[in-house]
Length: 132
Image 1: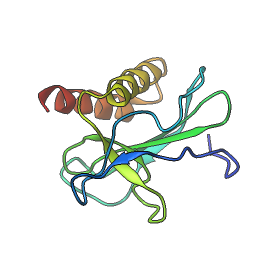
Image 2: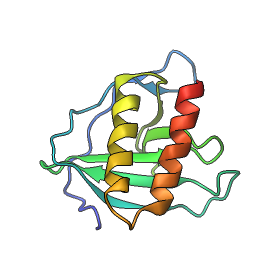
Image 3: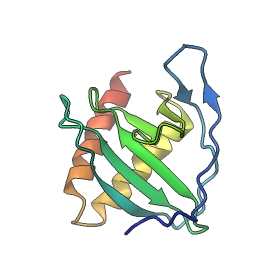
Image 4: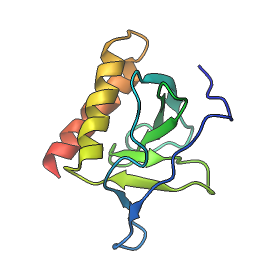
């Protein structure tokens, strides 16, 4: 499913205490259930993890929640990896947003056979999150 341009993208509140390494510590906007996967796939940028993989979620109010997996570590991030005018950030390890995002994306991917790549990426991100 394509994400309509009219969907609202939440504003982020970032911890930028480490330059060039922003982390998101909580949801920029609380998602309203039900939530669904609106779109997901690979960017053509290469890298050790096979490239950057993205997953865009949308809630019942039309709010868009863009996630991507870092192409080097496979770590779950929030924002856009390809839109230079949009913020992007790692999810702070152990934070509420990291734990809830991983659980949510994994549940959504498990409930549909069309998301095997996404399921693999989120399982890899879970291992990284547990070791951080």
